[in-house]
Amino acid sequence: MSGDLQLAIFSHGVGLAKPGMASCFVVWPVAYIRQYLHESTGSTGRTKTTIVSLETFGDRGRYFQFRTQKGAEIIRELKGIVELWSARKAVLSIQQSSAKHDIFRNSPSKMPHSRGARGTSLVNSMISNLNFSEKEY
Image (cartoon, rainbow, N blue to C red):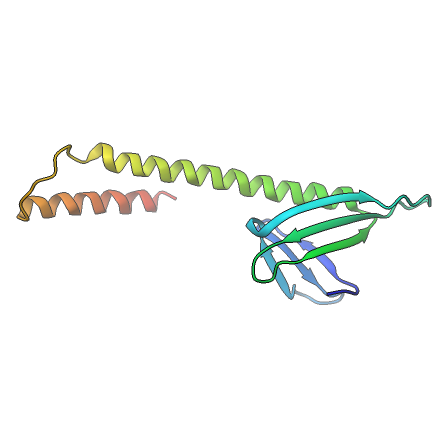
């Protein structure tokens, strides 16, 4: 892809749009951003044009370079959404780990060997604990 494109930064990812379009024609979730970089072009004019490079992966993964006068602002926004995504991912991981430990902590230490009603209620109890944990997210 080349030509005039606009980079859109959302709280959940980044997208590309052609100037004048109301929506992006391609969007990548934050998890698909592999790296981003801010480089100086060495221009000596009044307006400092910089290059923002963005690499994504996945089915539509690409490497893009944008010439802009707002490079620092774009990088700050990219850092913000990546940090927010990382924090959400860490919290979710902790919650999932905690839910797994709760299931094992609340279950009896010895499983019954018979397939009678007692074994069935134990399995149902474990399933209801699992469902309860999922609803907390």
